[in-house]
Image (cartoon, rainbow, N blue to C red; front, side):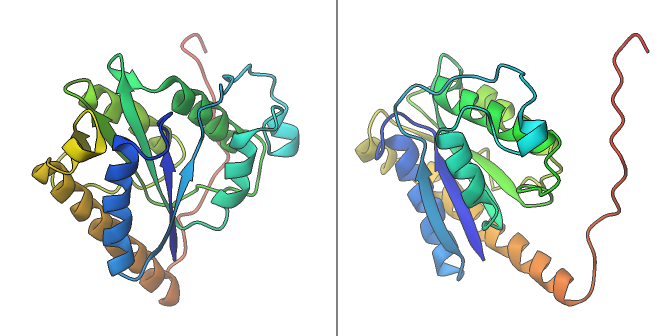
Length: 211
């Protein structure tokens, strides 16, 4: 089993990375493989609603989003991490997830995320963490991804990795998240081995507020 941890910070080994490493170490101790995927610090354009992903399953902009999408098929669970920028997720991780999850939502029948557990990890100097936490969780619920919880909301505080290492409760929360994710994955594996199938799926129904 493998969990992909996405570093949505422009800094490759900053505070968000430090938090994700704590989660990864807890997963590794439970026998779960991990990979930390950095989205980089080059600009990532937002979704333009061209609908091309419904034809190909990939985004029309062939960049880091499509690279990750291909890797996502081999993963069993996901952790998406972001720093707080103006009480919200970073611009790059927002554009990254908008396009990644919209292409999943389109006509692609080979789903990369369906019923795979996910969680969000947030880092901040001081505030905006819960707003960002709520923002990222919405991507998971629209894709039928079970959200794995921890003992507290998944956040760490500090302006640099050294300060994050001093956030004892934050690091504790990361370790609990890793162990809970490992438990959930093992439960899924046990269910599969016992012959319990995934939920029956039906065609999606789309309406708006005028019909």
